[in-house]
Amino acid sequence: MSEKRTEHQTPLVEMRGIKKSFGRVQALKGVDFHVGRNEVVGLLGDNGAGKSTLIKILVGYYQPDEGEIYFEGKPVRFNSPWDSRNLGIETVYQDLALVNLMPLWRNFFLGREIKRRIGPFTLIDRNRMRRTALEVLKEVGIFLRSPDETVAFMSGGERQAVAIARAIHFGAKLLILDEPTAALSVGETRRVLEHILEAKEKGISVIFITHNIYHVYEVADRLVLLEHGEKIGEYTKSEVTPEQVMDIIASAAGVK
Image (cartoon, rainbow, N blue to C red; front, side, top):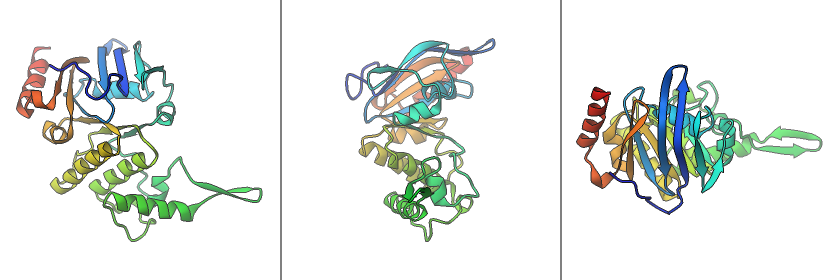
């Protein structure tokens, strides 16, 4: 089992002794978790393992009952997802946070609109946002005729690419992907995995949350396994096979 740091002595993010309860249900029982700089970490576990709760604490959606969080070596307390986002933590949830009936360029800049002043008035710079959205998406292999296309008509893989490209464009240091390959075709899954490796090449660390060990195994540097709110394993990819990971999770689920 690996407990060593993978990139630098100081991790990009570190969570120590994280505990969280909802009423009588103890969702997290003192979990330690870290992500190195320029590292892809697979976060795996069955339903109810505590993966989503841990990440929601990391981004400020929940507050921990106990424990500490460090970002770039400094203690932090995120009171909302905006706090973590301002430090460079971007999360792409399963629903992708995209609005189906809005055009692509509006989705791309949602909450981060480019504005310009004309005299006493502040206006949204629609033309600049349209051009930028097309250029950035072209860089990740998505070619659209118009930035005014609505998201509802895009494939699942294209929607994932939009969300990932948006996070990279706005300077993410840590990209959190929640089940990014769920319900995608084989070809779309392959492209999303390529996007993850491209993000790493740009110096971005990634947390890949998934049930599918075979998908995350292709791109992860390290695997962290949770079950019933506890960390039951932490391995570099060279230490375990996908089948061994599944056996560890199944055994832990069976004995708890």
